[in-house]
Image (cartoon, rainbow, N blue to C red; front, side):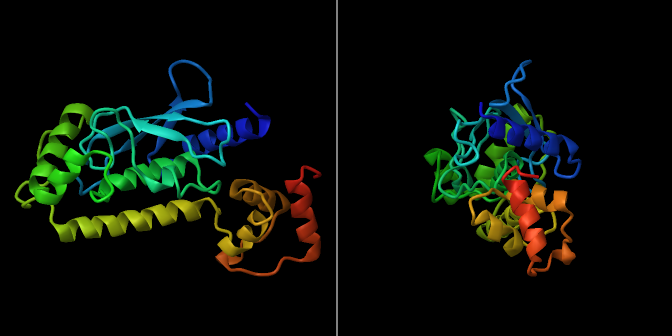
Length: 246
């Protein structure tokens, strides 16, 4: 494994361990210390059939990471249109065409958690589940809840007792919330700096974590998240740091 990739993965794992708010977990697979094979965990989001369950994801880091996405699949069986009920394979743009080196293992896991709130039955991984969600949302919620109890350790009491099950409107609202959560996860990588300010260096070929680390090393003011022009001396210090000259 290249030293740069090793350092990045190790830093991402350390950041997840230090983050007590997101409730996302990650560990090396089994008892080894291989950073290319990890296991992620997160809780089922509230106000969904998966609430109260804990879901485990197998994570494999390709050689080209972070320029190629991590390969993830659910170990925990789950009834969801974008996850195979047989193999755990996942259909999610963030893990394929919409992947960016800006994203991290944590943001990918948060995106998976958000996917549980915003199923996309028109772009399914499991056609049977998608068909049930489209034709009978209440039955979909019932089966999804049964699986959450059986496989993810969710409490047996029905979360949606008396609610009448999912409706197109409730699904739409959940999708909007999930989209907002995903955007927040992406912005979190900027550590409070203005996105455009950081992205001017990203456009030079550096990734967001490296640029943010250089800004913090040099001591660049976050200016409340506002964009501004850096002084030439600071530009030189940041560039030198990024090229390993400082």
